[in-house]
Structure formats: structure tokens, C-alpha cells
Length: 495
Image (cartoon, rainbow, N blue to C red):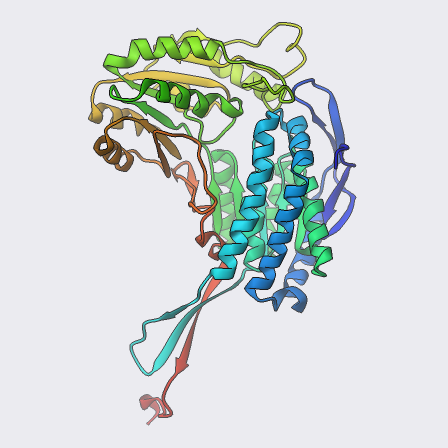
């Protein structure tokens, strides 16, 4: 897997050239073309859905007990772990992320398959309370075909978070990776089809269908055989997908955007808070839905904290993801880099003070890549666009707060509600704030830590539903109630 893969895509368990238009994937560190991929088209999606539905009904898959399906997930985890170095190198080339991060993402994907296997083997169906001469049971059955649409920022980990519980639930999966970063998803597809073949299971249980969202994604969410949609990406696209799902009356989960607040109280451990704030927004080059992109510092600490944060941010090492010294790698694509730069320029025009960064590096080492300097901005009101819009880059906006009510008012003044970080020595204050701030995940004296066992998702415009956790498998199944009569007497109405 060390070579850049061919232009084949996975349609119904078979590797072949896609029927859609070709597109190039580009190394954002150098601008060079990595591969030319022929996209899927609507006919490929239809074929994948029909074959996936047939595969999900095959006795070889349909009749497996949970512990037998768990064997498949364990085998996939083994293969992902064995290929972790290659998957990391491929993802670094395709997304620009540092090798340290992409290796962690590959191992995280393996861990997701292992955790899901364990949850599957130990999942219980319930005997529910009855109010008559019967025993009632709550059981779960596969949906059939699941559509999974993922973004470009962390493909292999995001793929695992959808594929693992969907397969555990007994379904077939149609995966649409982001058009900018399809390579590691295709590589993961090769590992999964290998595991399916080794266990003599239908390889049509997985398709990997890269291509434009307006073509492939739209065909996927509208196909009548796709019975559940799982989407991670932008809020605008999420709304459109939700509208289609509502029209079709199929379940949908949406993990969308964020503008997450990071809170530093005056009693915080300053060293811990500085390190956490910087990691929370500048790691992954800020290309993270949970990036702590709005910093709120209590007024007595604000000036000193921001000055030291600015000094340390300016010293962050910017470079290619292949350099072990790099802390801030290039953004995923030159077009995205330009969009981030436009956000910062608008903040400057609105009166924001650029404390550091705010520019594309112009030296020879960075000229060809999609780099943007880590940026700290202050002097803006909470209503400014830079404080409200998801920039999705290495850009932090800082604001002061006076007391807890002022903080909560400012922190919740956003359409998003995905994550929050709180830095304080006062556990009572942390408890209050964690409950008052509108977010699906709150970190206290840490940030961007994840567990496959802990549900993840947002509120408001940040999404609908949850990923991860034991209940993830059930979200890819249909619940059914069974009633068992316990008496030989006929029902009294007929008598």
C-alpha cells in the first residue's frame, strides 16, 4: 500500500474505474498531483445500492450471530493496524496532516472497529415490562443499506465511525468520501474487502464511491434502497440532506459545523490553559469541527494571557506533514487556504487586530503549498463574522468576559453547539458552566480527547444524533417489539 493507488473505485465489492468524470487529488504541501481518480456516477450508486441490498439479504451475512459479525470487525482492525504506517503516509499526502496525527487516526480507526466488535458481542435485547398475559421483547434488525458521507479532514477515523457500527448492525454500506481526499478511504476499502473475502462474506457489503457531492452524494441520499443516512460535513449540506431524508421518511444523523468556545477563568492553571488552547485550535491546522476557535478569557487575566498566547503562537513551526518538527501543516487545498485568508481579511476590515499570523507565508519553502500562518485576532465584538462563522483554519478569535453570566451569554451567542473547553481550578464553576453552555461535548482542563465508548455530536446547527458509544450500533438498526402470549385461554373479546 506504499504506492499511490490506481484510479479504481469500489462498486458493489468490485474494483473498477468509475463511470464519472476524472478528477485529480493534490498534495497540499507541494501542489503536485497524487492521483487521477475517475468518479462514480449515478449508475454506479444505483448498482452499489442494489447489490448491497442483495448482499445484506444473503444468508451468509443475514444469519450471522453477533459474535460472528464481530469476527469481521476484529479482522478489519487487525488489517488496519498492520497497514497503519502506510495509511498514515497516504493520508498525510492527501490531506497535508502531520504523520503523527495521521498515524494516530489510523490506530483510532482500528480501535473503533475493536470497540464496536466488543459492544456487538455484549449487546443485549430487552425483556420489557408487560401488563397482561404476555411477555414482551424489544429486538433489533438491520436496516439494509446505509449511506455514509464523510468530510476531508479526518477520513479514515470518520470512515470507521460509520462503517463499523453499520456493519455491526448487519447492513451494507455505501461510503462517499470527500472529493478532495478519497485515497485513504479507498485504501481502507481494500482492507475491508480483503477481510470480507477471507471470511467468505459478500464483498458487495461495501462500496466506496468518490466524486462530487452534487452527483454522487445526491444520488446516494435519494436512492430508494438507502434506508439510513449518516453525514458529517458542513451545515448547509446537512440541511439539504435532512430535507431529502424528511421527504423520504428515513433516519438521518448529521455531524455538522462548530464555533466552539474555549473558556479560561482567572483561577486557571495558566501553563495548562495556554497549551490546551493552542492545541485545541491550531492542531490539525484548525481543520476540525471541534476546534476551540473562540477564546474567552476572564478580564483580569486577559491582557497577559493573550500576550503570551500570541508570542507562543507566532513561534509554532509551520511545515509539511512529513517533517517530524512540524506543528502546523498545510491546509487541505489551495482553494480552502484562500477561503481562510478571505475570512481573516474580512475580520481585519471589520476592525479586528491581527496579533500574529494573518498571512500566507511567502518564503521559498512554503510557496508551493497551501500554508497559512497560525493567527490570533482580538478587538472584535461577539457579533462579528469572524466570531460567528466557522473558518475551519488556524484562526483564533479572543474576547474578554467579566463574570459567569456574561461568559454564558457570549459563549451561547452562536448558531452552533458542538464543543466547549473550560480551564479552571474551581470544580464547582466547571460543573455549572458545563451545564449552562450549549454544547454536545465539554472538556474540562483538557481538549480534543476522544473515546470510542463516549457518544459524540452537537446541538442547534451543529447537528442531529450521535456517533460512537454502545448505542451507535442500534442507530443502524430498526427496533421491533415481540409479544408472546403466556396463557392458553382465548382472548376474551371473541367470547
